[in-house]
Image 1 (cartoon, rainbow, N blue to C red):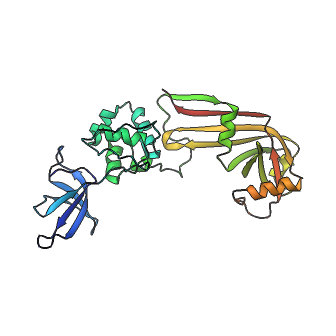
Image 2 (cartoon, helix red, strand yellow):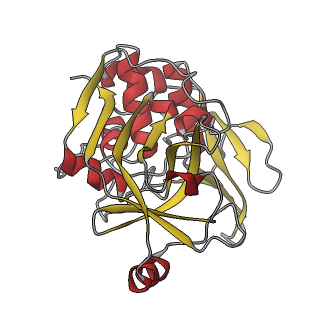
Image 3 (tube, rainbow, N blue to C red):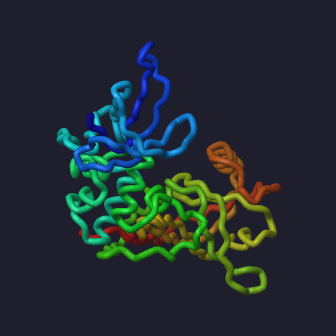
Amino acid sequence: MRAHLGDQLVVESPATGIARRDGEIVGLHHDDGTPPYDVRWSDTDQVSLVFPGPDAHIRHIAHGAPRSGHAAPAESGAAVPAFGAPGGGDIGRRVAVERRRRGLTREETAGRARMSPDYLAYLEEHPADPTLATLVRLADALGTTVAALRGGGADRPPGQGHALLHPRLRDLGPDECRALLSTHGVGRVAVTGPDGSPAVVPVNYEILDDAIAFRTAPGSLPAAAVGTEVAFEVDHLDEPLSQGWSVLAVGTARAVTDPDAARRLAGGAYGEPWAGGEREMWVSIRPTRLTGRRISPGS
């Protein structure tokens, strides 16, 4: 009998052959996968040391089953099939970045985590949903936490994570800036208030005909942007991966006075402004300068 972490141990009734108890194997005591096992029983959620008898068998679970229809390699002993271009999921990307940050090869990491290097390669390069036991071992091998590998820490103030070991900072071209602007719905507009003091205000926005448009109320602080040159900023930070991007648009803000244009904006809006209330005034910014930067792992 041999098992991998995450497999299921099923104990059957000798008389009927019907399963009477089952649980997840969460601990191995031998590298070759032979008993005994630490099993978390499904009926009690408790973990116990088990020496399986003749009435028990292993149900092998496809660890990290892919969403694309390809068969994922098992955690040990299986070869990785020929896949297309890498495009790992969030967990796989975080594992890869953390591994590189610590200067570990896949083979070293897989050895520490007691899994096949082929499975680790699959996990890093393809969308997958590894078991909790797999994540626990990977987090321990990488000196991090399961929450961090899952992208936790969203409530932590940004910028407190570790910097990348070899960060790459590059400027973004106008086309890439426009593409990134179109993926977001909240940005920050920098305006000068009626009293002459500067302010930065978050607003829900839309993109229409290459212009940035947001809804506000007359007399509000964002409405003070009308008729002035303003800066509009959008960014995205992936705190667990210590990478992200920002885009800055500069242009003159104008009130949308054409009824048809206002109706098009209202009809194409993805949602209501989070601030609530009556906000029927549309402000449009057509960028005259568009710049951006991205921080990512260096080669």
